Image (tube, rainbow, N blue to C red):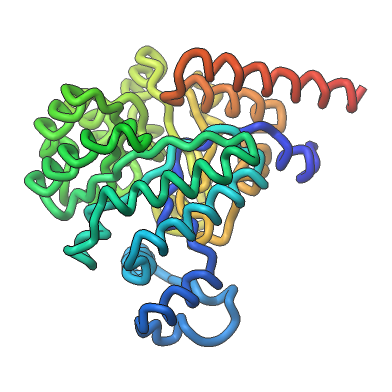
Length: 342
């Protein structure tokens, strides 16, 4: 079994992480105090209990409360700086990070999105220059706000490509807002030169994954764990080489998988589905990317970790020359790890 130290040093590519879900508990309370925002029970007691939740609904309310304390570009710059610092510590070389301007505007309609994304970009680049980390941004559309708001967010994302926004995602209430409702939104995104991903097969069944692929034409699926219920869909994922972004701790804590059930990661891997490992909202779920890789090793075996890391590189939207560099770093790590073991 690989040690936690080796897993942490494993060069990683991060494809499914929400910036708002990386806010450290201490920072959450500090920002709330700065903005005079009442936290109730979350504002008192041990920091490790700050993000407790019992149901998926409570989690969504918690995510909203975290977004509520983010009021200014400087607030976002702070959490971006902390995210990049933590990601580098976890061995991340390249990341595609979700941001949710539709949620920001829900709480603070007057917030200047361009100024905010610019502040995030500056913070990410400052840390990245020191740590060798490159971070691209994906604008996460919120299903619950409807097609018109999603269209508005795509137009905005297209105007932010100079700040490293490279694509869009689709989050929110998957069961009540199926992918097909956003077909025109995704067509617009592609015409604007944006890459496309979507959450699917997390809170809804395999039909949601199929719709994301066929109706939206997405290039990756966030979660996708319910795909295991549909034999033909599994074959389609393998044939089309559509990667799944797998976040084990998230899947259990949100109730996407019943407690005590077996996670389908090993079955996906056995069937040849491309799986990348991620942490979703690491601070809110009390996990890290390295911890998710350790869980993946328990589920699919330690030999699978290099394959998952390779899948993340291949499934990323990094430029071809950057992918070559990332693969070289992973190959060098693998050679060194093998030499150490032997």
